[in-house]
Length: 170
Image 1 (cartoon, rainbow, N blue to C red):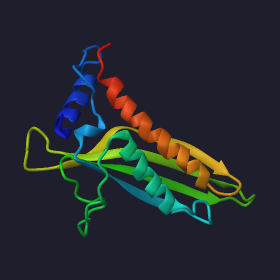
Image 2 (cartoon, rainbow, N blue to C red):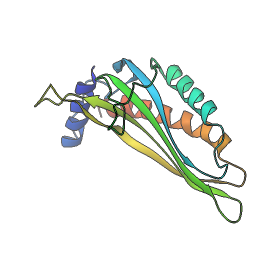
Image 3 (tube, helix red, strand yellow):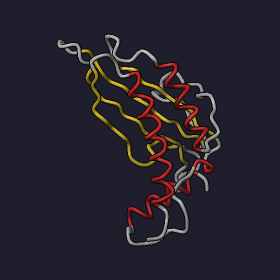
């Protein structure tokens, strides 16, 4: 199943929630590759193991069945890299800061993104989110380093499970 089919299947599920689909909405084998994109908006030492978390996320993607690839190069004026049709990006955004009482407080957001050629114009690619985002408020007196590992593992597992379960017949 290609990303275009995934989006079409997702839309069909939204439009006809009582209809049964023949298989999963998405699964790792549907993609030619996946890469990790991190947006670090944590300040004052709230998150200091970014490189280790990136590697851990890549390992979790591989364990889930994805082929892990390097992030494609970004064009000058685009906020995200130009994605090939069958790549997905695991986007991890951390926004946290240390409060006056010493507690690091903020949020973690993770989501999967991909590019699809719409049925009405196959010469264009639309980059969009695949499935729901996962967002949590986070806080810890020291930092968010240990917390990040569990969240990365849980969000990747939840996204894969959601794609497989959502497409199953009722």
